[in-house]
Image (tube, rainbow, N blue to C red; front, top):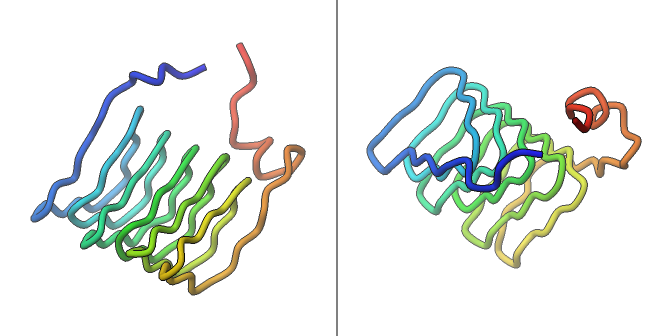
Length: 122
């Protein structure tokens, strides 16, 4: 199991990242991100702009997001969040005011997508 204290990374306001991003621990996006993102927990803050395909354990969306999210546990769309794309997740919570423009597929424990992307216990 991954160490919950793996770290904290921040893409701050005024910072723009483009490309493939792999992160352990928590990533907070306050600025802009474009590309592909893989990691544990990602939080996009109000005012952020993310255009990416994302595979994470948990995703919290508080800014503008365009792309596809596969979250093996939870997706939380905050009241300040604006999502456009596809979501694949085990659980989703949309706060009143959050904008969800796309589709949601709930992953089951035996879902092929989940099985192929998670590592076996060790």
